[in-house]
Length: 329
Ligand SMILES: O=C[C@H](O)COP(=O)(O)O
Image (tube, helix red, strand yellow):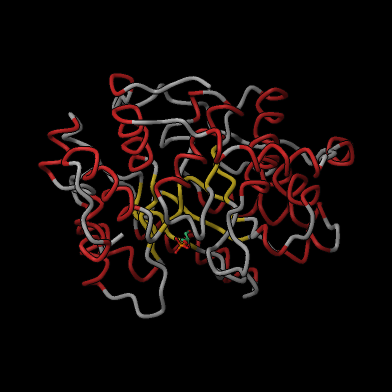
């Protein structure tokens, strides 16, 4: 495994990647997709145990994880005040004295992710920070509202200032094998996003087997997705390592075939620092260090940051604080 020393954590923007403009639907490629489920399960079962990051190296990876968080609130009782608090946390994700001790004074999260109605307070609270606002869209989380309304929702969120749009796919198109319908839907969503980056949520916990997840990933990329994302966080099963591995390998295949780098966003249920490290290591091992960067990798998480901050505090002070001290994020 390659290592990431403290000196290698860079906050400089990466060279701009050419955007994935998609491809015509290639059913032959889709039919050829195979997944060896037993091998995927074996590989992912060994990943957490192989984590051997300690001390300064672990702290550097945890800072990288912070940079890759889409700090999220997606609750029916969200208010402008809650979003403002979340945005304050996004600007200063870890206590200033800890960041100073870690040599990471400018550390911030990848984005703040909210529902459409919360875009305005988020933008206001993040002004001048350079942190983008991501909006979930297209009838999130089920995606079963009328198609024209789902398209209009994207347009409204982009007009309101969201720079990233997390759309949900129609799971029924996947479950019924209607790949053309899925591709058409996603191409329309991508066009409606315009300059905003599109993250395609596959809701993998509702798609059945891993081969289906692999094929849905490929169709989303063929339709021009900038990121593929595992879950809404609202399905009974969300971001699992086997699903993640399969999606990463489809991203690798797509890159090998087209030269284009598509991003990955696991989301839902990732709340422990050690799980974040396992994900980052898997991404680095499967796709290389270039992907371990907020322009190509994000965690969708509402409660991961608190645990990372606790671990960083332990690294700096040798003491653990109570979890309740890190309530937000
Ligand atoms: O996209 C983000 C997810 O909804 C967050 O899920 P979570 O609340 O389980 O961290």
